[in-house]
Length: 371
Ligand code: UD1
Ligand code: M6R
Image (cartoon, rainbow, N blue to C red; front, side, top):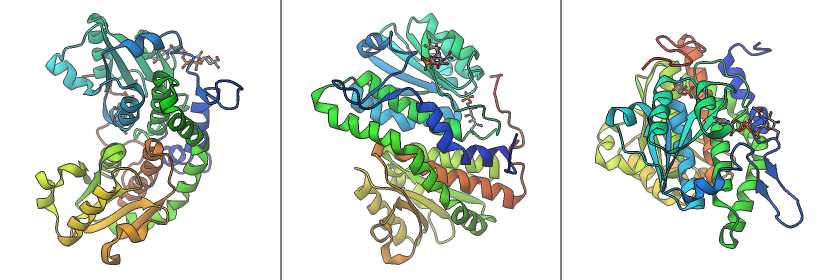
């Protein structure tokens, strides 16, 4: 049921404040006398000791689920101190990449039925790794075959383009990082800031959704373009990849997500006064590096659209030339949840304006059950 919305994708984008609330319900603890703020993931509590002792954590998924894991990787590495490696499921299988008993393999999948991810799971099980699922569909193959896991509880997602599952996956993996990281004196204030940030996140998503009309205007300016680039780094490298995936899969516009640190190693050659470029430059420890990326793109007359933290337009706009998307600022590791929303809206409006099928893009299926 689409209610008052025209498309499921539109409905699912706009219901993210509620889906995130459901994802976190009963899993965040604030107040309790001695232990203060904490996270409780029922599906993992008996396995946390094993996960903490693992030599490596592998994130395994496809498409949007892979991107969500990429967004969560920095905070998991920071809080756990365990090396985290990223695997696209098909590539892990193509290489027969080594997996050991001392590994924790985390399988991220909205549907829980993706063939490549499921095959990678069988492979990791055969190799003796602890296998953890992050799934939306209760009772799905991946949820059943993993040793343990967390349901993201985002509610049924119908649009082929994954939107609310992405933000819920990131939130669950941030909670996973908090749960694995445990409570040490040295990271206590960081943990508390993240937990406070999680409590407030649905409100911040509600605020960023107010950019709907602005993103519609931007879409009308970009509607006839052939190509679009999105530059991100750090926590928001994933945002660039996921924003680009959304635009290409539904609006059928060639869009490339690029790690900003790689700009001078090739992509800079594409820059001219015609090609639109979205640069994600919200406030975090990478901000000054992103500022210099913006300056260099500007020096080559790049057609820039800069996403920055609210109130930060002046610091990302050399000569006032760029168009700016201002978003609310949240804790750095949660910022990808905010930053993807305007790009989801942009992909949606571009699709409507270009006259393509929003909920069922050509050639694609919601759940990819063959290799
Ligand atoms: C569970 C209940 C929830 C109830 C709550 C109360 C289910 C599905 N969930 O939620 O309805 O309100 O207790 O305490 O009945 N799992 C996997 N792989 C996955 C996902 C999950 O093995 O990919 C396993 C978990 O390890 C766990 C079980 O499935 O054993 C349920 O997971 P989850 O729903 O996340 O657990 P709770 O949040 O505790
Ligand atoms: O159900 P899964 O999360 O395993 O699906 C993985 C991908 O097929 C999926 O995210 C795909 O990339 C989406 N259509 C992206 O919007």
